[in-house]
Amino acid sequence: MAGVLVGRLVAALESLECGSALPLAPPAEEAEKAGKDLRQLLQLGCTDGCTAQQAQLAQRTIAALLSTPSHAQCICRALDVATRTIAQIDAASDVDTAEAGLMRWGHLRVNLLAVLLHSASSEERSVQLVQWTEGEGARGAAAACLELIDSAAARVDRDGVSFAANVLRNLSMPPANRACIGGLTTSRGGLDPLRCIERALAHAEPASACLLAASARLLVEGCAHNSRRYLAASGGGGPFASLLALDMAHVHPHARVELARFACHVIVAARTPREPGGSLCVPEDVRAVLLDARVLNMGPCFLLSSNHKGLHVEALDALRVARALSTDSAPWPGSLLYVMKNGEPPLSLIAILERLVETGGLTKEEAEPFL
Image (cartoon, rainbow, N blue to C red):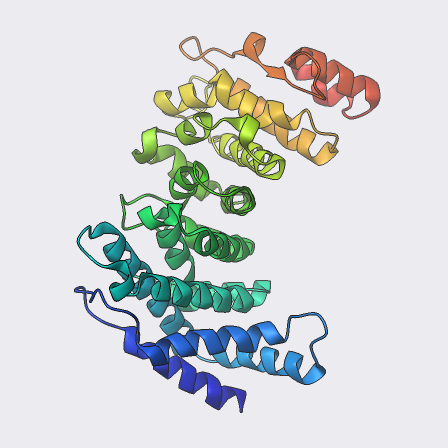
C-alpha cells in the first residue's frame, strides 16, 4: 500500500520538472498536495501518541521513498525547481507575488525539505540519499539545501533555512558523505559549501546558525581535503574572513563552539610534508591566515575556555600545527593570544595553560611546548 501511494505522490511531483525558463506561476495543485501528503505521512509516525499503525506507515513510506533512486531524485528536482522559481519571483520587481504563487512555492519547498529530513534520519539513509542524488549536473539533496541557504530569498525564509540547515547537518554526519558534499558549488557565486555556510551565518536565526556551524565542522572533521579546498578557495574574502567579521558576542554559544572546532580542524589539515628546508609546505598567504592571532583566538584559544578535555586536545593540536608553520615572515603570535573565561579579565595563553595543568585539565607534558 505505502509503495503504491508513494509512487502516485512522486509522480505528481514530476509535473514540476521544466526547462530553464521557469514560469512565474503557482505550482500545480497536484504537486502541492503531493508534497503536503508525503510530509503528513512521515510526521504522523513521529508525533507523541501516534499509533503503532501510524508509525509503521511512516517507516514504510520512507522505505518506499528510498526503494529506488528515481523517487529521491524526483524530490530533489522538485525542491530545486521550487528554489529557482522563488529566486525568480524574488528578483522580479514587476511581478505580483500572490499571482506568481510565492507563498505556495514556499510551502511546497518546506514540505519537501521536511520529507528529506525524515528520509535522512539515519546514517545509512543519509549515505544513500547522497549517493543517489548527487551527481554531475544534478542538484541532489545536499546541493538543494545549499542553494536555498545561499539564495537571496533565504534572508526572509526562516522556516526554509531551518529545514535546509537541519537536512544539511544530517547529511554531513556520515564520514562517507563529507568529501562529496565538500566538492559541491552553489550556482550563485560558485561558492563551496563552507564559504556558503559562512556567508549564511551573518543573517541566520540562532537555531539555524547552530545547525550550519555544526555542518561546517562536520565537513572538515576527518576530511582534510575539504579543509584544504576551503583554504585554497579564492571567493568570499579569504579563509575565515566572514567568521572574523561576525560579532561573536551575539553568536549562539553552541554555534560559537562549533565554529571554533571548525577552525581547529582547518588549521590541523595544513599539516603536510615538510620542505627540504624544514618548514611545512603551506603557501605564504595561507600561512599568514593560520598564524593570524584573530583566527587563533577565535578557534583553539576559545576552546581552552571550555571544561571539556576533548576540546582542549583539539585546541592544542591546532596550536601545535600553527606554531610549526611560523617563519620569520609569519611569526608565532604567542603574546597576542588570550582566553576569556567566566567573565574574568583576558588570560594569556600561558596563564590558561598553567591553570589547566594545576586543575588537571591538561598534563604538564601536553602543555609544556607552550610554557
